[in-house]
Image (cartoon, rainbow over all chains, first blue to last red; front, side, top):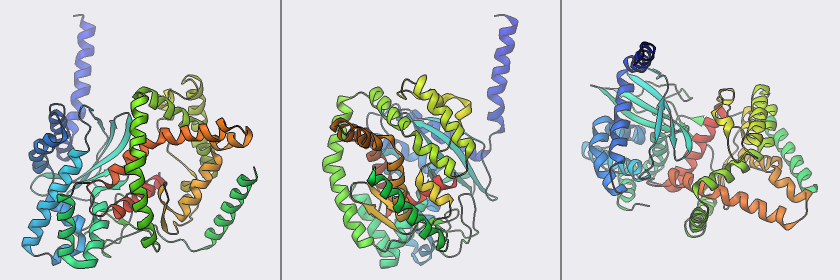
Length: 193
Length: 259
């Protein structure tokens, strides 16, 4: 190899490594989660298997408890500990199915990461652009720090997943409190549309 | 041309009427505690959703729910099979090219709204992108402008966005038969987009069935698979499909209007 080529290679390697070193823990978490999921998605035969296989990855990297709490909103305080546990479990099932069930097997998303922002201490937003099936989507990963950084919301083209469920749970809660919310959730989990 | 003129007149009257009414915020925090709005603001409450839940008055909800239900049946049992057939007959690359060409033709919609919003830079970029796509991209079948840095920050725009930027409030939410979610403001915006779209004009200029039936039909056909995918993405695995679609629509439009 010519010395100049070697130099170019070194420069390229450094250029690649630099942004990697500058990554925040929150961003690293989102990147590794996406990489893990894509690695699984290219190997599975169908969405049912994908739903099963991504569950451990999502449970490790996503705070479903925080997601459920936020999606339910102020009504959460009136839930008994058992009801809260049930709500988290159901909502986890629903979100995993929504996420992995929508994936088109064989289509690989290309994610490009933009500079993360810190809207508040202990919170991070990782904006990305996802190229999927020929279309570009603006996707923001919202993360929060508890013991470590966990993903707590996904904002696709301005639509917050948690916010979207909040609008639905609010209506159920106003109608019949915690029981109505749990019924609606159970119904959604048991009757896939 | 008469219909067109009448429509423009109606929108002007509507705009004037709305501009004089008091401007209400389009979003409101649902728990009453997180007083901040906007996409990156944070309230202290542990239960907040990073800001606010989008909301818009929905006084016609009972009627809207019926329309929404009928739309759902039509999408599921009529339009989805049709879209599937279209996807089967025309390969992906072909569909993409057709889609691109129809989007490219909508240039007057984008150009006019950039101008109406006072965004001359956007109007200029839009013109540049249109020229590149129409020539290098062969009548807009390809979208080479998409890969050019000069057009990288080109934002989407339409008439409803112009109304929002002028400070006209949403009014209220409603569901249009077949078309789907909109608000009073955005519905008039849709009419504006329709009037500014050359696909609409050609039927008036050349009174041949090819122009007023075949071309608009092809236009509807090419957008159908895309629209149905969006509908599915917004409503599958929801708890209440109607509310999921309404909220997704409002959140998405708020985002578009903030760009």
